Amino acid sequence: MTFIGPNPIGSTPASAGTASETEIPALVAQVYEAAPAEERCHLVETLLRPLGVLSLVAIAHGVFAKIRFRSAGHELKVRVDDLRNVSAADMMALVHHAQQVSIETVDSLVQQLSSSGSMTSSAAAIVLVGLLVQRARRTTPMQARDASLDP
Image (cartoon, rainbow, N blue to C red; front, side, top):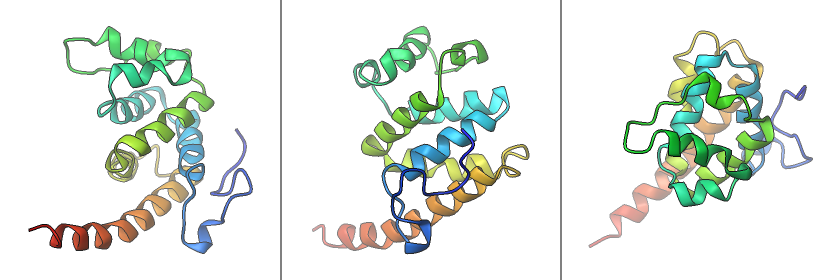
């Protein structure tokens, strides 16, 4: 991928204050492609943690389910050779699904990207962190109000 920015498919620009469902997955895919092998493993591990095997079978032709099955019964540890067949499109599908299951998991990438020296120099990573921080700021006040309504 050569695109660097938040508007890959003619969606709403980031300056409008909203990240569409395709912007964040596209940016994560760009970050994944530019990342060193070990960082790729950490990205995939983070995104796989909250997802069940059955749901993983349905995305990216089951490539992530195979990784999860290999770790069955053990702590999830993605190896570099596990990612040989993982494409940018597969990562987009994984992120899209992870956002539906646990938006907090995708938002947690901010800390991971910010703490990685090799990732902080990526333009896509910088834009991604900005979008994730914006989204977290927008959703946190609403979640706090919703929680205050509970008896």
